[in-house]
Image 1 (cartoon, rainbow, N blue to C red):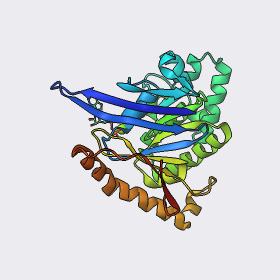
Image 2 (cartoon, rainbow, N blue to C red):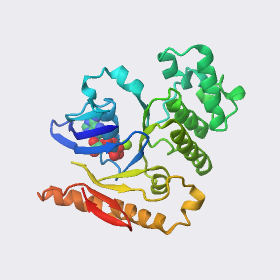
Image 3 (tube, protein in one colour):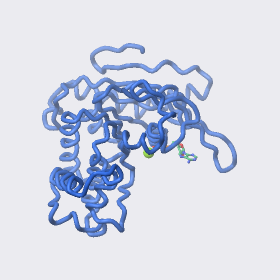
Image 4 (tube, helix red, strand yellow):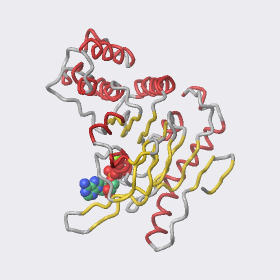
Length: 288
Ligand SMILES: Nc1ncnc2c1ncn2[C@@H]1O[C@H](COP(=O)(O)OP(=O)(O)O)[C@@H](O)[C@H]1O
Ligand SMILES: [Mg+2]
């Protein structure tokens, strides 16, 4: 289990003023859960995600992994356990596709054969012919193909926890659907725990067990935890025929359009922040 405990980040601006971007984010995610951060642009999603594996050092608060405070774990060790997909594709231009995919496995000391087999298997998963593409360089692939490589690179080392920052943002709709389905299948098979950021409400409902709604920054917080009450095995095609899908969808859109701002405005005017709400849209509401 991963637990974020009162995690905060204060940035010092160029003029020396301090801005609290993320304010006391607390949440718990069980092993094998897929959770999604949804919130307005610039609210602090990337900052929060990067604090989980210390790509950004928290100003205060703790990240607990299976009950252990990760501040005591060496950064390299921590990142073996917690894989990360960056917002940009971030392929190394001077490495072949195979070398790009196997960066982390090679760091972990996997032998050549195992690396090659893993790369081949992953390429097939995103419908790219390994024989044709593994020896190529990133510039010899289209933007969408490069993005797919970025996604499978994150999966390559079988990290128990994956942090994904808008991983499918640049994919065309068709490829995005394929990779979403693949991610669900992989997670069901491996029990990997995923933290993902997306702007896509439908993607959030398809993939997430829990959706963390972040309020507008500064002082962004988790305002609501929305529990996905759709059946765990769901497909993009069937989901749209379930009235519950629209209840969840409307709830999320309303938050993004209205409530996220209201929460920040109330906070700025000195009203104490209400506790994080746990919500099951259309079914029941409870206060945590
Ligand atoms: N290194 C930094 N120095 C100062 N401010 C930063 C830095 N990184 C991010 N910020 C600010 O913190 C806020 C949250 O940023 P970020 O986590 O990237 O948001 P999101 O991913 O939700 O779009 C933004 O207002 C951003 O401008
Ligand atoms: Mg971001």
